[in-house]
Image (cartoon, rainbow, N blue to C red; front, side):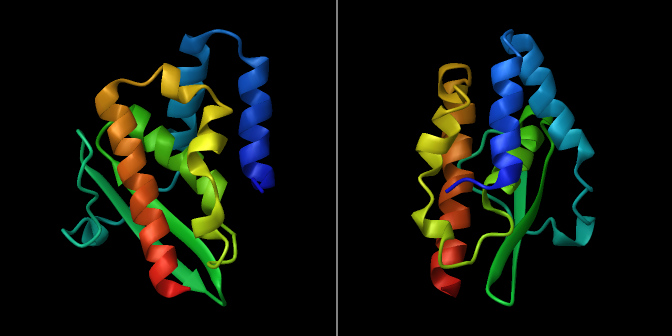
Length: 136
């Protein structure tokens, strides 16, 4: 069920054997994202449960789900980029059906993120699922 963009990340992770290289890769994915407009960094877009500052701005056009995001932490910004690869472009009705934990486990991230980062990742996924479920 994963998008081609997410499958590309999985393939790149398989190629990168060292976790430092994988962390750098995730950070580079985040750096490649367009920054979120400061006007969108408001309480309504802020994700609670993250150790760092995180904002997610979803949009749904013609039944297709997309979101942009921002964080003040480089690794979290990279995790947002990975989640965008997983979810962006899906029909909004399919978003809640994605087993994000299983998809992210394919990257082995749960073994290499701190408890706080893992909690933040779960909070971002919960926000994405909630917004999509409300819209569907």
